[in-house]
Image (tube, rainbow over all chains, first blue to last red; front, side, top):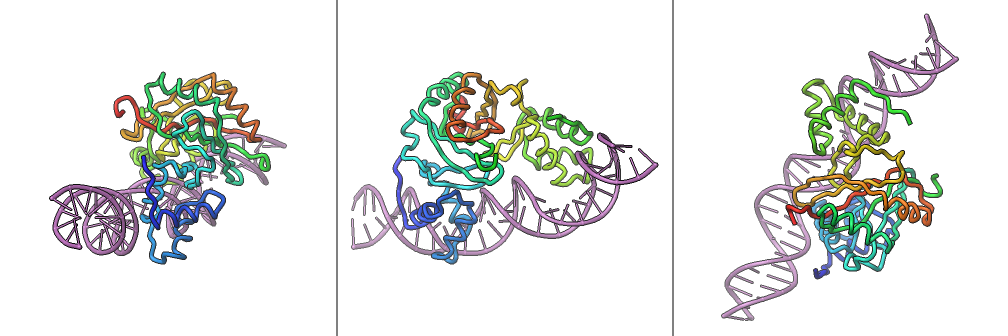
Amino acid sequence: MVFKTTKLRNEILKILRRARKPLKAYEILEQLRKIRPNAEPPTVYRVLKYLIEKDVIHEIAHEHSYTLCQLGLNNADSHSTSFLFICNACHDVFETSDTQLAKPLERICEQNNFFVNCSTIELLGHCEKCH
Amino acid sequence: MVFKTTKLRNEILKILRRARKPLKAYEILEQLRKIRPNAEPPTVYRVLKYLIEKDVIHEIAHEHSYTLCQLGLNNADSHSTSFLFICNACHDVFETSDTQLAKPLERICEQNNFFVNCSTIELLGHCEKCH
DNA sequence: ATATCTTATGTTACAATGTAACACTTTTAG
DNA sequence: CTAAAAGTGTTACATTGTAACATAAGATAT
């Protein structure tokens, strides 16, 4: 699975990197239009889809937002699992990873005859500040 | 956390039960209109929100759909974790639960000072048929 | 190097999903 | 019984995402 870089993809990655937090597709579009004034939604969504497939970014489904995978690992490193903590109050998201969950998760999938692609797990609740 | 039943809520629960699969909000609305012809989106979304809070149904964020919690347990039973297997190909969803993940998940949350509400975990991949 | 094929992007138009705000009704608690 | 709270009706709209077709850029073979 080769990752092919293009001008547009780099621009969007740069926007996500600069943001230091998850962005919504239309927030990315807004930024992108500063350098590409006639950008439209499909421009953004197509790149997002590609970057998700390549495990470069995560979709945060519960928040309709997108963020760089903050960890050095990607899913080639199948011995770790990514967790996204999503605060229902302030909507902060932060990512961590753990190596001890991989085995049991693998077992659960096997038991259920399921073949996981992406084991980024979204946990909903409250962060320390909002608790 | 008391669950209060009403006519409307029961109607929507019945629709979800009959469906035997996750439904989208507008699919629920469509069904509901057969008995409540002037139902509107907020009617559905408000009930869904309530039922999610009460852990009676799950939102399947990656699919924009909603399903009855198929398991006898709810989150009062904090010793088990729900998993939703979502097939990226046929979009089938099925639920299972596991008791061995609860402890390590708890640890991860504690280590990150995070207070989980809902630990229903969506796993994306392919089901046996589509693999 | 050029014709061809594939991948990426531009563009238009729209579909699908979800919510704010206010009115009205029903239920609950004192 | 009355006031407050919870639930529902209704309108209007905001947000999120995509289909479909056109054009451009990059890769491949001869």
